[in-house]
Length: 419
Image (cartoon, rainbow, N blue to C red; front, side, top):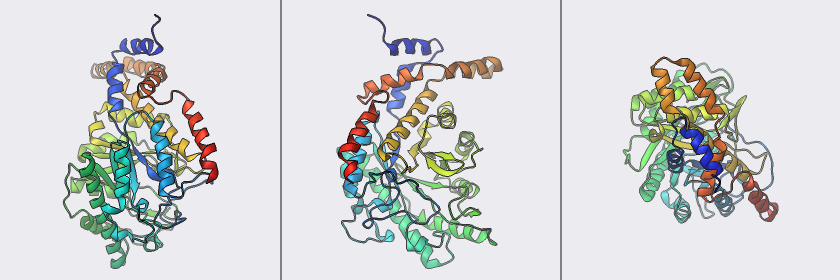
């Protein structure tokens, strides 16, 4: 019997000291948290026909098939998870609650409003659920400020919302037995240059202290704060900057810092920040995205920047301290395809990192043989990653190669065309 393509590829890696079976085992046990908002363009379901408004972010495109209800969103997600190898999570924003047609303001949300999501996720054996307060698309966010607002009543409203969000996240973690990450991002900033940069940041720090005052089980729940370089309508000044949130997370000592791949200058290396952040914070939340010129949240691809991120996680042995999620929203193409392509690309980038000849690279570096180190890096680029990935998909009983697009196109013809 002729050896399989996987066997031959595995032998190629073994010649460099790489155990492909160990890599596939680690890949299968690393969940990625899919972002629910890709399916409906960040509209949510607080009210019928809700759309994204304000908040320093926007989605572009008008491809047909946007999910209009919770049932449609879940139906779309069912297909997405069917096409992905591995066992994954779902990341919910507060505006995606099951409010049963009733208006529930953000400061009054409770775990009961997400009970149907828990049941849905349990039935599909998801790894767990993650959560986010939604500090945008609301009258109290219309002027571009939430937790840093100069009006105490507005700040108190958003503090109450974030407190409620943390409790919901903790309830998820307790139910699933896996740690839920609840991530706080706010849109606060200024389109033009402000006079007072310090005041809003002091108010934000005080608000965050109030948000995180309640102690929650570290087993059930992880807090995170997310920075941004700028947002639409906040080009000149972002209250929650990288320096602010990194300093806040380090000062607290019990909060994860979120690195979003689309929230920095295009010439910055997100991968280079990981080891520095984890020197001083207990854990990291990673939002895998793809910024193109500005924070445009393009669908993730297995490009050099994405591969570098996962290489750093593996090389530094940081996977155990990192929650991995996706954050992009592309309405210019089939939304389900965007989910599947982006998630599989992130998994491929992780697999590539797991398949590096790390032992030989480490030895070459320690002995000062930088020529060999460079040669190993270059040799790794040409190794048969695709054959190992295809074997992973076969073992997980999901489509190999581009065959997943056939199922998506069939679904589009039968379901999405009627929306």
